[in-house]
Image (tube, rainbow, N blue to C red):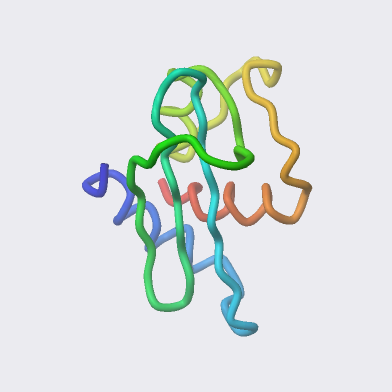
Length: 99
């Protein structure tokens, strides 16, 4: 996962303002599977599998989650859902937009 995520993070993270000590922590969830926990701050970023816990930042099917990790979006927006709010989604999508 980091082979994909780390180069992508470097580019996406360059478009975020880290001046206020901000931190991104997002759970990309597929029902019945572990979450992918995406974290990033001014010092670096990571992506790892974790057990489902708490609310998801973005919930989707497995194919859409793979697209999101690669900085893409599905043509059919109804295939993913989020209650995270516009600022959290903007930050996650910016971070994952590196490619």
